[in-house]
Length: 178
Image (cartoon, rainbow, N blue to C red; front, side, top):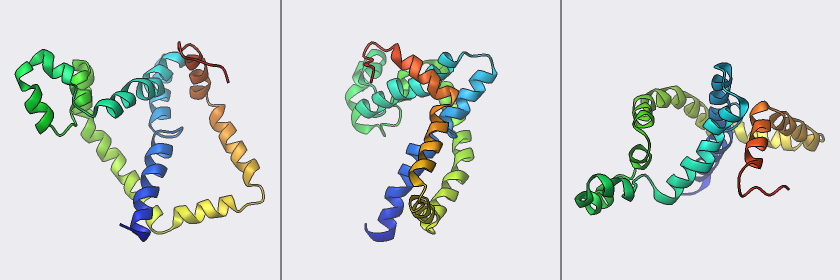
């Protein structure tokens, strides 16, 4: 792989998933706002969005893939070896979570995919046709670049979700003030 295709493959995931989708106007903020609008406190809404993903789900997936040996050993010890060698490794979280979470994940996955695919397709085309690169170069080329970026980052930092996050994170046992 090389050239434009490699750039698209490398640039697309970082722009889409790591920044836009999970970030402020993406999945976390959308879920946070729904929870807040339905009476959940800022700390509870933050715990059920960012904190659960970053402190629970993502580390587990990163460490274990998607197959929990403990889950299969409890329910069917004879299937451990077969399951670990034949699994697509996409069932880790489904096997490790509660029945309600599992059922919700399985039922809602196609809906989330259908809702998000057009956004990812639009973003990929924007990367592919150079729009994203052009915007980045134009923004970075401004004489007011640092001030403009600082303003945008301050707007994000001042959102309730991230203020709640500072409080929640300060309660962690491993918290060290910066």
